[in-house]
Length: 495
Image (cartoon, rainbow, N blue to C red; front, side, top):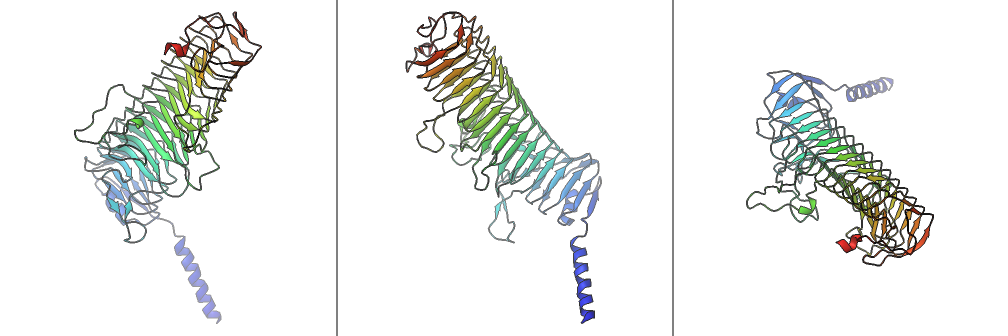
């Protein structure tokens, strides 16, 4: 009996030793095949590729592999993606990828071919990869669909450089269980439009591909990326609702720089091809949609010289804090949003409004949209070619802002009701300092001096809706008072 127990114990120890055996490191040098090493590897192994040029396209179907390039160049010779992945927990780092139809493809985008996975031959699913890590790679001139394409959950796409891709620079779609994906510290330049026949649910046609970073999912961190000279939006984000992802910020768009994105020319559509959904053809520096109101944070981004808005937000429950926008071809920040806080942003020299808060086109839940309730506080909107700050809709708080030396109005409320305009400074603007077109407005403790229409603010609100001031005290204007109508042309009369 004692001997049997000893033998059993030895067997348990041996099994444990086998289970914790270290993974292999397989080294590949010039003249050897990386694909052969991948085919021979076991889950958890690392393949180290030495400096050199490797004329092959790779396919990774084993979970847990790490491909580590040490100055290695993979040249796919336009025969497919440089690296295709349909396994989970894979890491790809340190490669230069050239002459691929795509750089790294972990999506069903290239040919929609399907690969059986997980159940040993059951119903196939589109190839995708969960928990993929793509770190410190360089993709040059991906020829057809994009530089880095990932469909899966909990990805890390960090420190990569993608230059001159056709289609998408970096493209991500969340499929799988809730898990936060990080897209950080990447540089994406000069992504060009390509006609990719892939549609999202609800889209009226194929979505256009010409974005620097294009990401959609419930839990996204888009952090410290640099996107420049891309044909459509520099960063395009759609936040999805998903069970299990509630209670945390759905997306965090932080410290990115987006410059010189968008083009004014019409894109070329191949003869006979379906037209892309023009509602998705954004040319903003940063474009974010959170239609479910999950609570998206947009903070400390820089957006300048883009073909449309610097930052464009659609949805509800945004926190928009400390962003800098300048010299964009439309608005600095445009928010078609409700229940949002827009705080401590700067907008300078934009060709339309510095900060424009518009009424959402339709309520996200399909019901009646009654309360908007945005808080526009402590922003600086100066030297823009139209208004400094323009808002519309009910229940806004507009407080503590500076709107100076804009070509038209400093602060204008085009329509709405129950709006509070408090403690703002609006000086030396080309029309009114503060113009009100809302009902039941409270205009309190503002300063408006040296504006071209110096009689006082347009407190009567002569446009549609016949605005009414409810509370008026503590304001400092050149002249004028509660019952004085402005002699200048009103915004709504002009249009």
